[in-house]
Length: 429
Image: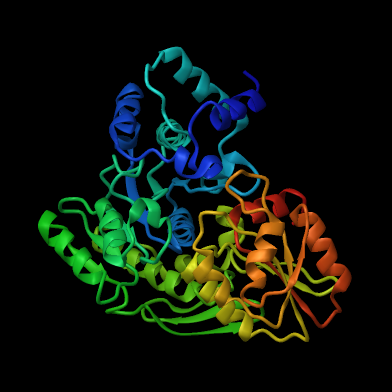
């Protein structure tokens, strides 16, 4: 098989939520357990940190991987989705798995003659576990896909579990209340394994406490003993005064990253209690160089200064868009241009009213059946006073925004990680 043939097999021959939506979602652990046994239980060969949550789990996963990597460990990192290259999902010390190794894994799997039909995510997570074992990693930071309890990755027994927060997203699978969603996220809490909760409120905290008590897992709420004392923006970065590591400069500039930094540092403190010690200079450097260390992109990221500052962000649900809008209010510009696209299954009736009505909108869509067509989005958004035009793709929408913008304006690109993926695919960063 060629690499492209392998990708075609993964994307087109197996159910994939990211392409199909609900039709490609396959909850349950039996197939993952079968594949794990087929490949000799590879995840048992290294220590794992398992990360779940509605928002921030990708950022926190990358932060933890960077800290461990600079501490001298060999670190695997499994995240989803990818922006441009499938291989972004599976990295060791920041380096993507090679095309040849992707091909070899799929060819090996096909030769085994497994009678079932794994989903895209089931086979991809098994690929990651196997690759990390082959690469002799010391640690693997594993991000869940959807939920936690029935997520394909939940066959692992980590040394530490992390749940960043709970908000409304994927309610068709995870539940219609925060407590129901929290119950699904809490499914990664394992007997005797410490768990760090980044943010919890009066509705979700009892769920985490009850689950942890039931399985005998020590529980740490990051917000109870904050690691982030104060934070401010400076030079396009966030400067954090921390409780244990002094001043930290983080190149992730989104305001919401303060919560993620606090969660990651609480997890680092928990790891220290488990004997995994990371020095302050290492912690500081890991946040300062997180892009180059891990390859993380798409989080409140300045992608251009011409004809004006252009920012993109991966926020795509109510909590994520709320954070984006709050930060946009603190930016300085004459006029705001919003290049937006959403997946059809998002709660747009509650998301669209959050967006500023004094901006000019350029509606478009990613090329996936899950996406709401740009013209349909334009008509829906107009009901909330969000006026603009629709375009066939993000490239055309951005070109129109740039043609209309002056050097003192601001362009924002977002609404969907898949829209950003298509933007990155046609952009030289």
